[in-house]
Image 1 (tube, protein in one colour):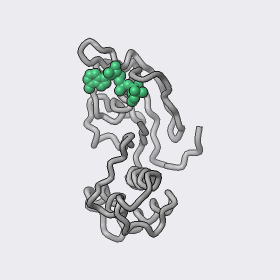
Image 2: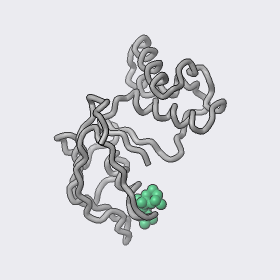
Image 3: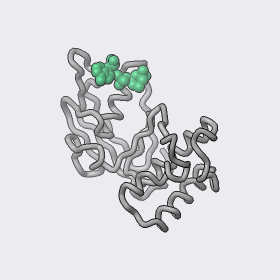
Length: 166
Ligand SMILES: Nc1ncnc2c1ncn2[C@@H]1O[C@H](COP(=O)(O)OP(=O)(O)OP(=O)(O)O)[C@@H](O)[C@H]1O
Ligand SMILES: [Mg+2]
């Protein structure tokens, strides 16, 4: 459990979620409730369904059976962009042609937020991940850990209800 740092944080509830890929049962009837702002790790052998479960919460896969809730809202059949969830992939995939600043700003630009707000929020997130003043760098000029922190800032700046790390 973690102090609730993000006021947006929402409870995640899975009710009897299953996911089948053809003959493969990737997720077999999982039910769990994750309190808002808490930190939970899914642990298990390779192929047991961890990534698939995260992808179902993010909306990148649709459950074959069961229900997914974020807060009080059922999101089982909602697309990813209607869920206020962000997911960090193992390969953090920064945009190589954009500066660190523009990588973090990306989602806010899509939402057409005003420039002053974008500047303020991006600087805040870069500060938070320990990279103040590094906005003008190119991702290729960063260490692996620094790139990962930029990816984290890019997720945090969207103030998601749920943040998933594969
Ligand atoms: N798109 C897909 N099509 C078919 N089968 C899939 C697909 N995605 C995952 N699977 C299968 O579903 C099962 C669960 O896969 P998943 O990626 O969720 O495992 P995991 O727990 O994340 O494993 P790892 O620890 O290796 O990352 C595996 O048997 C996998 O082969
Ligand atoms: Mg996996």
